Length: 117
Ligand SMILES: [Zn+2]
Image 1 (cartoon, rainbow, N blue to C red):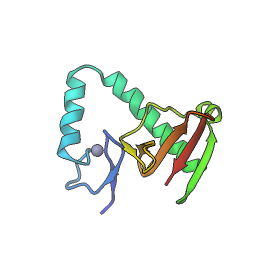
Image 2 (spheres, rainbow, N blue to C red):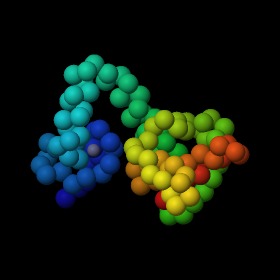
Image 3 (cartoon, helix red, strand yellow):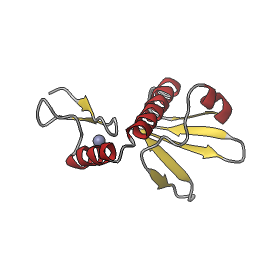
Image 4 (cartoon, rainbow, N blue to C red):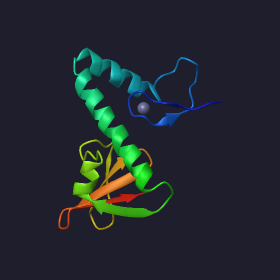
């Protein structure tokens, strides 16, 4: 069966039926709630940012590994540090942000964006 992209988080999923638009019931409900709250435009902005981050990361790091780019360059190419899915700390207590199957972090000292897949 073909995978689809969830309209809320853009993660790929296997639809349980042909009409399924969300990866899970939680994202269906969350999307509905956010629509009802009237902040659709905000969500759309977030999704655009998230998708641009994903596209940029995919261009910079198509396979597995680690790469880095200056934050300034990344921003010129559409990087949005607020558009991520979840946060995790590494063993050095450093925050990493998730975008699809990528993680990124910004090293504050040298303004370097590090991307890991
Ligand atoms: Zn989802």
